[in-house]
Image: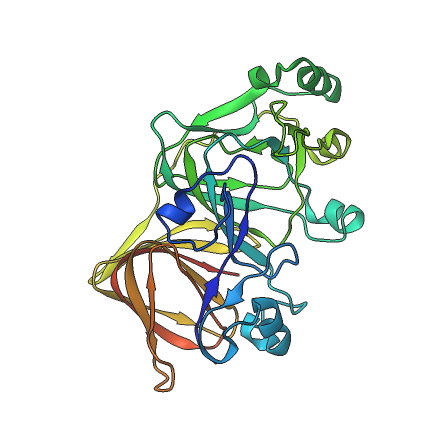
Length: 321
């Protein structure tokens, strides 16, 4: 059992930019580079292992061979989450994701509840989160057809460090100029409601999914999502704060100034995403060599690997189920 450094799978969606390659050292030569799927076993974009015994294999292959790496809480032997970096140079489509019940029946995969951590944002950047007022299918259809949907949507200005929880069924859209870490269910189901009449590299408009979207969408008034104070726990070598805790995953922001320890027990694997700086992870196992990491890299820590010591000067997201 060893800590695995992961190599991501890239996506060249038309709204993407170049920051993931230029600032986060992603050696994926596609333009634009919209997303990197950092920790993924989804067939649309599996991660590769970059080190150790399983170097060159997909994370999917490793976890099929060693389902115990997922932990006792994972019942079906499949990685339940998908972790991404997202660089929105342009606005994403206005979209919605189905919940598990609908998606398992109609799409044969999980639904998609997700969270966003804003790594960086241009001044004045905003995102879409729900509706300003209660909607109906007729009002929504007319707004899409006449290009007036914008007046019904709740726009939220974002800043570096903001966190947003996006339950399945919430209409949403990441705005241009935002760099995000996204943690979500292991799913790739998106229903586009509106796409600004854009065309792809072949001159074709991307498909919309209005009829499916209205079946899964919450058309009530969006909740207040102003940023609430977060509880930060300080330690001699760093700090920890819980950003999101839902039935699918828990995400913490960890800032290391010298060193910090945590335990990876038999219940769940854990994932570390390095947002800034550099460091290394050590374990109590003498056979496990320290694993170095730097800005933009992601590590998979198998369940049961025990106490881990993170040393360095770095900011991390730590995810577990």
